[in-house]
Length: 259
Ligand SMILES: [Fe+2]
Ligand SMILES: [Fe+2]
Image (cartoon, rainbow, N blue to C red; front, top):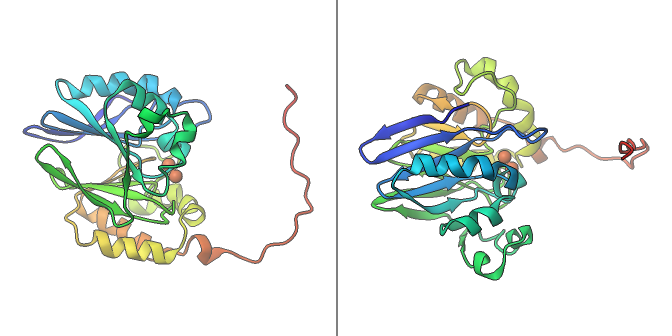
């Protein structure tokens, strides 16, 4: 898939980068925002994706510089390439304060670890040149230290794993009801619970959102689909809402394949 420009205006571009489709790795969206002379890359993925994504980022930056990295949470599909990104760029990387002591286990040396900027639980405003991005708390959907980014220039909400779909046919959602089957199971199992979804819905209803761009699967474009997604998420039983009593296991796990 070639890069898709989600929004463009004078001095501002939002780009969805090509997914390199790495074997059994879950397909992921990598998002780049370029504003004036600066760029921020959201959830760049693992070290294998790096060699595809890095040249694409350089091409899309044109004369701008990658000044910021944003990690929505600590999962491998988000952050396993942190070492490569922090070695090859001078960007500062923003991640929940919950994860700054864990991320260095990906092999970051002391200098690179100092490039990590902890995000407090309440989030904050992140300046990309003269543009203020909102780093929104979205804890427990699904990680306990989880953030989303709202770009007021494009009115895009980058929702991370929330809104993720696995195996949808296109880059954009066409029919919300038909799309549900690609995201229902994921949200019920991975999102932590209804309260987290409700808190999130109340927060984002305060924003003027044109597009919800998740880290996996299709993008919700237009206010009608955005509204439908928020309503659906707000009413979803998930995670601990669905947790049942557990029993001691009796079924033997499968053997690994012989080497
Ligand atoms: Fe995740
Ligand atoms: Fe993910």
